[in-house]
Image (cartoon, helix red, strand yellow):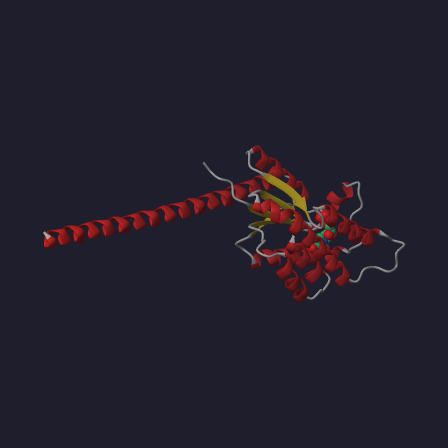
Length: 257
Ligand code: TMP
């Protein structure tokens, strides 16, 4: 029987790329398979991280506030929320061998803050050294979409979004950054074009997930077989030694008598 192992899956992309919808779909499918899975998001995911999220988003939307957060304040808040999220939710879930699906993670910080706003990546890399530990996504879906399509999707939403605050060119830049990140991390990232609202996106995501899950199962099996092989070799050596000792004992016995 397959003993479930943890798998950390992230979804990335600009607002309106469909990542939240697709992450929910994948979550439901994995649950249906009978596997332990949780769905979470960044910024947020825990009580304190959600409190930090509120501070960040209030700053975006408060039109009366003329004193906006500096880009480094903004970055540090995202990192603070991530620290809370990792320490209180992600680490624990991974330790319990759950599959974790996270709507946005580290790539958003590089795409929005570094490429989008010009924040020095050194700050993020140093903070990540302390925050992430051994936590890193196993699989990342980067959802790309036509900017006009993203706008259409966002117009349908009841809640306000940051499209009102950021320019179109900003999102073009951020989306290009996501693609660049994906190309630099080919082993972990897969780019999925979600410009057309069709079922193929869902299928592509699920197929990729199944492929990664099967690879993980294979790895576990190979490890098990390797351990067994070592055990056999060890037992073989033990047998040879026992025979050799027996042989010596018999020889000594023959010499003595
Ligand atoms: P959401 O609308 O997808 O929940 O994302 C919230 C906003 O936070 C979105 O505009 C992207 C932004 N964000 C960053 O700028 N940096 C980050 O590190 C994260 C996680 C999100």
